[in-house]
Image (cartoon, rainbow, N blue to C red; front, side, top):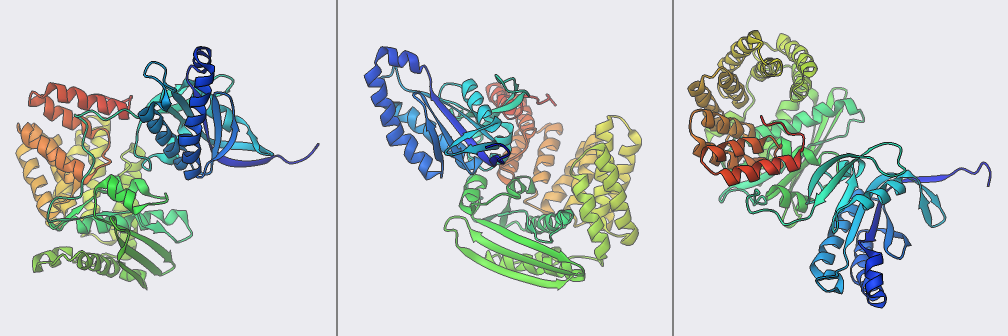
Length: 521
């Protein structure tokens, strides 16, 4: 009807077809149809229903399915391909039924029970370029499933798809069994230690710009828990990959190898702050502890201390007097200075030239309010070192970074991050023995510091101890199971130095699978 408004919605679209359908039909029409019907009845239809999919249409050799969730679409596709591969779809070894699957997330047009539009067309074209028995997904789909689906995504680059105006970045799912050289699936933390992952606290303030504050609370709790040798604490790099996504704590437990997950939220309004937290057993899904803190913003440090103490108590960890003193917050840090610090730290961790400048501006304002704020000085030193490494040669930045990092350590010898940054600076200055001493001090203060372990591994390598470096990298990967791909370079470096050439090659191949654009250093 003219002028009638089109009905649209966002959906995940799965398009699948049978590889070599015409050839199979030519060889055995009745048998192929029988096997294809059995495949749909026994595997595809039940799996689609289990993942809340809607079959839009069946073609002779394919199917089009709509899902409300990209995670459901990709998980369903993986399971279908696995079952088809394992059971051979009832065919002989020479002529098995095999599928190609394409998945896209996009806007679709609804017309009765049918769907149309680029969202559908792209899924169909992705199916056409998928490998036999494989799955190809668009970048839009990949963004939504990253970190939520237990499968390896390989970036296939931008592809020109037939009748699609713009190139589409494609990711292929590697469904092959993992090589023996690949890192093992994380297992629960070391014997005798409770293992915990602190997820990014949810910002409930109603203002997206307050995200830095809820993230900062989460990171401070990770830092505090990392100081206890009785705990195995997962790094922010891994736990923050779940940020803003629906979380299944049992899945998090499996993916990160932890017994417990801490979830929480922060609501900041005017001069008041509300922090909630809940500790969950990843095996049973049971809540071990939960509490809520409503305080004035000026009491934020007391809130963090109380929350951390209650978590430690729930985990049945008994603190020594020395540990209690180490966890207690030192000095009178102004709340406004702390706010500036959190904003500056977020910018510093982005590690770009412009973010370094913004971070330094915020951190220096924090220092102007609280001159003895050691952590703020440490992050200023970190930004200066970043300027040096980005610019590759500004000796003034390196020298100033050394001076500021040294000052931070002098202000608070028990701040692990200050020792970490000083070790980084010294390593770039090729003062290897001093760098080793500083990072060892960092790890003595925070045994679960993932960044400290990675820095120790690098320092050990340059101190001529590749065997020690290799063991430290493995410890680092247990603390940061979703480690960035450059960590594989350090692993390959140590393996190569120990004459483990095949292992080094396999490690570098894994790095390229994760990021085909990786540089060699």
